[in-house]
Structures are given as C-alpha cells and as structure tokens.
Image (cartoon, rainbow, N blue to C red; front, side, top):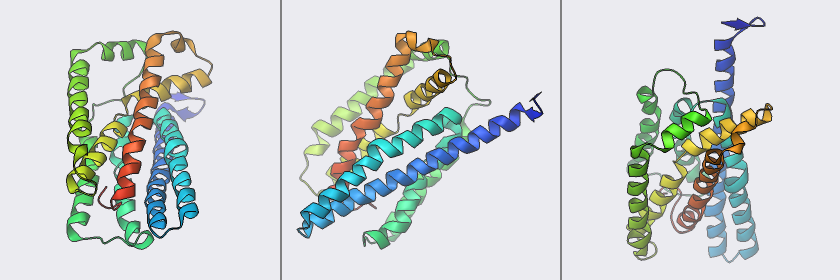
Length: 248
C-alpha cells in the first residue's frame, strides 16, 4: 500500500529504526548513569565527597530523566517486540567498559553470565506475535480486565515482598542482598507494557487526537509507566553503590 509515493511498509520500517535508535540511546544514557553512580561511591571511599556527590547527581539525572525520556520516545515509534532484542545491549556495553572505567575484574563467569542475559533478550523476538499490535483505548481496557493480569500482579507483588522483606535483610555486601537489589530493580524496570501504551497515547495526542485522555485507563497506564520507571531507581542506586557494576 502506498501513500504519496511512499509505501506504508517503508514508513513503518523507518519508524521502527527510529524507535530502536532512541531506545539504544537511552540504554547508553542509563549505562553511563550506572557507571557514574558506582564511580561516586568509589570517590567517596577516597574521601572525595564533593566529587562523589557530583557524580551521583549526574548519574541519577541520566537514569531518572534522560534515559527514560529516550525510552518513552522509542516505544512511541516501535513495538516492544522489536525493541526487546536490543534491551540486553546495556549488559554488553557495561561488560566491555567497566574493566577500563571502574577497574573491575571481568572474570570468565561474569562474561558468560552477561552473554546469557544478552542472548536471552535477543531470542525473545522469536516468541512475538505475528503482526504489530495496535494499541487502542479499547484494547488496553480488554487487556487490563483479563484474569492473567491479576494473577501476574499477585505473583509480582509476592516476589517483590520476598525480596524487600526477606532477602534484602541479609548483611550489607552479601551476594544474596546484592542479588535481591538487582532483581527488584530489574523486575520493576522490566515492566514496559505501560510505557509502550502510554507512549502510543502520547504520540496520538501530539498528533491532535487527545480523546483517550478522557478515560481513566489512559491515566492508569501513564501512572504505571511512571511508577515502574522511578521505583526501580533506589534499588539500582543502592546496588551500584555497594557492589561492582559487573555484578549488578
């Protein structure tokens, strides 16, 4: 199908490329932010408090504002199934640069673990549905009232409580506590459905179609996107301050 000499398929491809590019930029920003947070703790250990506080503020800025901004913009142009294989790139980036920027040791076990995480994200594209999902207000309604959503939320809340009220109480510096902090941060940040749908609704509004924002579901989705984007940050920051970035 063509419109004005440009095929609809070609236009969609350009949007997907732009979306992936924006998300990858956000991943670079997020990885840089995590590196800065870890650097801030190392500077404080050297009693360079002002320098450490500056690095921490810059790291949080990249993770709170700049990185999520690129993520939301990317999800407005490309479906999550297309973006998902690239979300593991931050693991690869961090694995490559951390030994040079932070002086951390890249062991064989850490390298294999990083590649397993990246490969798992990459192969997820083979499990996506055929065809692009059209996210409308009606479709969002339909998804939210499904029983599997409630079951997912119950199990997710149980997993969160298990970490926060049990594993996180292990002594500071222990492997289990580090695992817990990383798991909670990753579990919260990994809930991207709200981000994807909110980005689509926002893009429609910028195009002059803001009717969806008259419905409570649109605001609930937006609240969910903000919640998952921000609540993971304290756990990530605490983990990066006390553990190697390659471990987290």
